Image 1 (cartoon, rainbow, N blue to C red):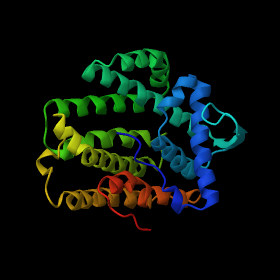
Image 2 (cartoon, rainbow, N blue to C red):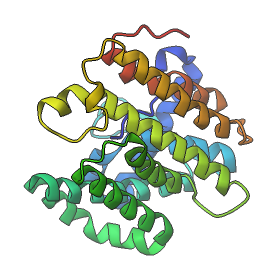
Image 3 (spheres, rainbow, N blue to C red):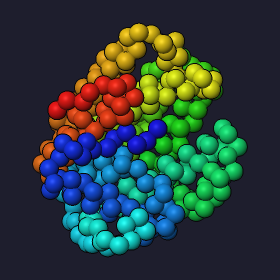
Length: 275
């Protein structure tokens, strides 16, 4: 369900593209430094967005560097990190661990079980450091599983469960911005869940998997209906985003919310993206 919150790179200038890629590389390095080489495989662009938004809001000290990595062994890549990067790496591992357990419980996926065992000790340390976030993430995933097991046809219930998960991720600490960040994360999480359900609808119907939109599948105005729902959810997301005093990387963040998050949906429904 992750991987939707990414930048529309062709619409960014070279400087912003380098800044965005350096943030991604910094998070990738943090995952390896803290949790080992295999932890890089759990990295998503969604966590890169988390780093950029919270980094823009709190403006912590940044460490800049340049190094090689297994993906780019020849040419060195620039990266930057901050304390927010470490936080995102921790949340990334927590989500990956619980997702692996979910895959094991749902599909008896032995590879997922083995991966979960490798991350268990790290997950327990993260829970001790961030009990609030980890408790909500676990509760939200359990709630989402119950909704899916009961085949609840309400898209609101499932989207809200995932929204609660995302809402807590964006609150690195309780302060004056907590309420706005939670509202933003809730709206973004609902948007992500609904978009994922829209894109997976055909496959979910074919393989008898849960999807709250099964009744809509095959309608002539399917894409239009989904677009209306998603635009409404993104409107709530942008409304709360605009309340945050973001200056650094604001262009990149707006690019992601206005264009990047629509990339997979537009490709799936053959919709031409306009700037």
